[in-house]
Length: 92
Image (cartoon, rainbow, N blue to C red; front, top):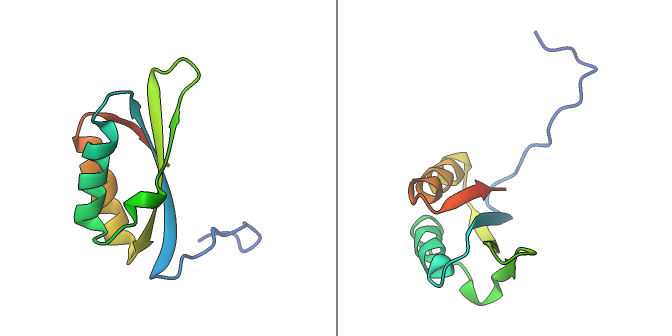
């Protein structure tokens, strides 16, 4: 039984706007690959608002994408498929 004095993580109310940061090795087609995976799980995502940043030494790229999250199952499936590409180092 959990101690009632422990802070609880805030519950997410779905659907909601949900920012995701995806980090992977820099490549010309990285954003295209990531966007196609995200589009499968969050159809209609606004790809024009994606923020793309290079790392300090340009070895990595980070993409910040805001999706409309519909539930934890969607987020889990998206995370698994992003990692399965073999090109994603981290999803935040």
